[in-house]
Image 1: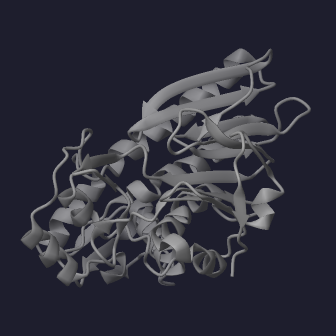
Image 2: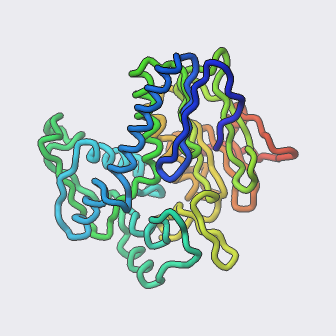
Amino acid sequence: MLLTGCAKDPLVQRESFVFGTRVEILIWGASTDKANEAASAVLQEFDRLHREFHAWQPSQLTALNDDIAAGKPHKVSPELAQLIIDAQNESKRGDYLFDPGIGAEVKLWGFHDDTFKPQLPDAEALEALKSAHPSISDLVMDGLCPGLGKSSDVAAGCQVLSLNRAVALDFGGYLKGVALDHAAAILRANGVKNALVNIGGNIIALGKKGDQPWRVGIQHPRNTGPLASLELRDGEAIGTSGDYQRYFEFNGRRYCHLIDPRLAMPADGTQSLTILIPAGQVKPGMRSDADSKPLFVAGKEWPAMAKKTGLAHILRVDNLGKVEITPEMKSRITFETADLHATLRPAQ
């Protein structure tokens, strides 16, 4: 997903590279100093989240994963405890087709690296992991943890224990969305009313760009240009899951980083799937990232998953390049690809 439109007058733009992807912040109508100060605070927060919860470089997450593998309980920070709880809730909502507990499978497929080798994982190791059925639902929290009703002071000690030593957490499937929500809060706290934040295709909008809504593009999964574009209103977020950024090809087949937990295999029925989270939702950035994953993995069964997760605005490109769209999303977008035919499919 990319940003479209020209950068004009009271627009301040900042770019960076975090979470393994390009990050862009656009701020409209604030003084240059104020906008740059707010954007710098956002980028610092992105760097912090990336370091603290990295899936394979030393972090809070790898320390927890080490203790899970050793069968030991681990005291987690209040922030990590909340991330785990949110991830468990999101995973349950999507019937565990999105499951951050399968980090070992992601690693085995070679996606715990910045470059991907065109090779398949060891078959025996993969079958062993598949048979172990690791899931974030295997984590048990005890002590002063959020949501357990014992205390709001989680800093005093929240312990996490896994019932399954094959579990390894990888928040790559929703941490960018969490970062969007943090960015929105930071911008508002700094007095910024109009902004657009893009983390590799996950985008959240604040206010407007002048007297017009922000306009964004949806990346074509096989071409360089946009597939479609739409206006994002204040408080809305949009997210795309695709097979075209983190993948490798082997013997003519594409293997992407989005793993189907049921098969311990990369999902292969979809090229890209975009969802829109309307304004007024709790943690819209997080949902824009996490909730696209179960629909992507569900393949042609995505309408049923959309209904289960409460999503209405969806655009999907299947593995043959055919486009499907819900009526709600069709009313919002403009296709940028000539002669494109989209099939209407409601969530059901």
